[in-house]
Amino acid sequence: MPRTTTSLMLLVGALGCTGTIGEGGHSPTDSPDVAPTPAQCAAQGPAASTAILSRLSARAVDRSLEALFGEPSTRAEELLHDAPGGADLVGSIDVERQLDFGAQVGIAEGPRLQCGETTECRTRVATWGRRVWRRPLSDAELDALMALPSGRERMTRLFGSPHFHYVPEPVGDTPGVAELDGWARATRLAFALTGATPDDALLDAAAAGALETAEGVRTEGERLLGTEGGQRWLRAFFHWWLDLDHLADLDKDPEVFGDWSDAVPGLYRRELDAFVDALVAGGRLGFDDLVSATWTMENDALARYRGHSAPSSEAFVRVERDPAHHAGVLTSGAFLATHARRYETSPLHRGLFIRERIFCGSVGDPPEDVEVVAPDPDPSLTTRERLAQHRADPACATCHDYLDPPGFAFERFDADGRLRDTENGLPIDASGELRGTDVDGFFDGAAELGARIAESAQAQRCFSRQWFRFLRQSLETEDDECAIEGGYDAMQGADRDARDLVLALVTSDAFLMRRVAAPSDDAEGEER
Image 1 (tube, rainbow, N blue to C red):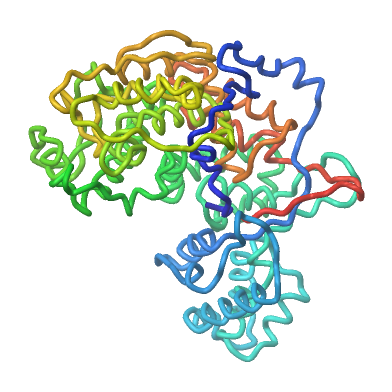
Image 2 (cartoon, rainbow, N blue to C red; image 1 turned 180 degrees about the vertical axis):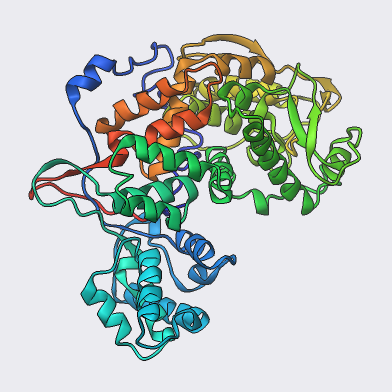
């Protein structure tokens, strides 16, 4: 990610019983909040976030090294340390690490700038300086680099400098909303759509003035989405949105899931990535497909694990699944296995995801006098029946009545992500209810829930909000609501293509401008 944060944690207050849900947050029985109208947004005028000085995270640095040198890198994660919670606090130890990092890059890549005082050498150093600092070097900066005696020292200076590790966006000191210049827009666009530093083509566009207009930014945005880095970053969004940070390390109880192995999380990751790639290759990254498709991608190994007929392919290929139970990424193995316990399903965690990540609800912490204890396993009952007993306790009822009903939709899928017919030899009830949304009502199973979500304007607006958070790597402010609504509007075409939403966001005022605070205002820093 361009910024290291606490990942907008899905499970904050995982058993909270004081939740609200909706665009601005409202109780489960309220109707969804009203989105800003075009007239209101027009009257508001340009809106943008406060000026900040942001720092690249270690992962963003490593992705940038890969973009610059063509080889995967872990050097930054080994040498640099991100501030806890994304705080942009810099001490002497951070400066020392950045200088040490620069020295290590200089040792590895210095030969690229090992040249004498010639015009060709000066051009080469200027080219690399623009790539690394994401803007042209001044004559004084270039002279200082040329005065260094070796390519190693030149690379060390470039990569150890604050000009590489930080992302200044100069717009002057006059309070108000100001447009970013082409170089700052190139940097924002590159990190938003590829997670890495701008490529030469984007820097050339900035130099030519092509990014001075929203149309020019959109043209470059479309190009970046079609690059390998853009495709990889699309996949990264879905990993973030589905809260799969711990997928690679996922483990299941061997006494319950004896055939689970370390290979399964990797297969689930590849399934999800192949699903997203297939939608893009088909020309439509449609919202309704994402949450309600009845097909997935499998190879022989994943099919065998699931007990399906193998497609006779080591590569992942499209396979049709039971339309009564499947709902796009919501029934992907990665989502289902991650949002479950080691030994059993968790309607609460799956329901919490629906509340928070699909409908943008908020769930508070449990009351201090409530002891958070899951009901004990009972082989004579289903999970739903055990939770019904749990809800008989008034201290637990509010929380579970709020979160369990959406999560019951996925009870046909076990904790390891596989479809099941029974639980403990008993029939499974996967019916549930949505409340406090614009598609309230009862449903039976994941497919019916996915169909409701696909038609929900509230869920689509939340999807725009999630994309905004991912692209900016920060929570939105009140000034950003019109940009988020613009993303939702852009996705209302026949295809409901998420890429239209993304392009609308990166060409909004929130991305192309910055608000310069008055001297008395506080401006918090962030890490990219």
